[in-house]
Image 1 (cartoon, rainbow, N blue to C red):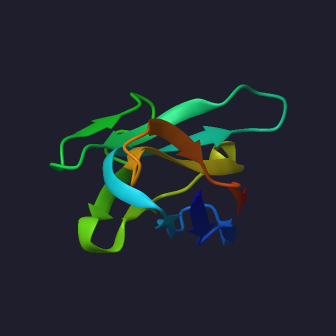
Image 2 (tube, rainbow, N blue to C red):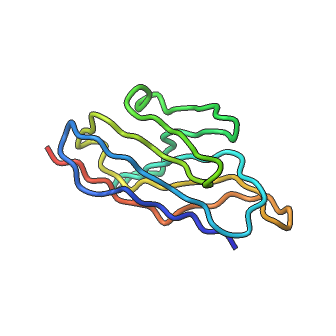
Image 3 (cartoon, helix red, strand yellow):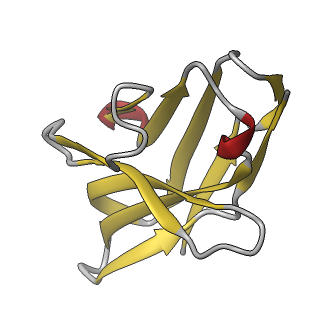
Length: 120
């Protein structure tokens, strides 16, 4: 059983910053790629950024240079530092992990989502 627990969402004013955290718990053997996805109201879920176990990152074109993804492998945790936030960034942010469980079953998991609301 694996769970991804997200935190850090909330209300911020335009221009502010927010740091999201996501920790993976459960019968985990190893975690490969972790990432953050966002879903605005009435929109589809889109990738924000991903990071491999070795630290290689990929960003959506629209958020590159505004957000920074990082991870702490010792804590099975991925972070998303978001700066200069705008109202258009208001969305539910979901954590994702591509991992292998202790019984060597590979799969990907989603967190429950954390709401980020940016006011003008």
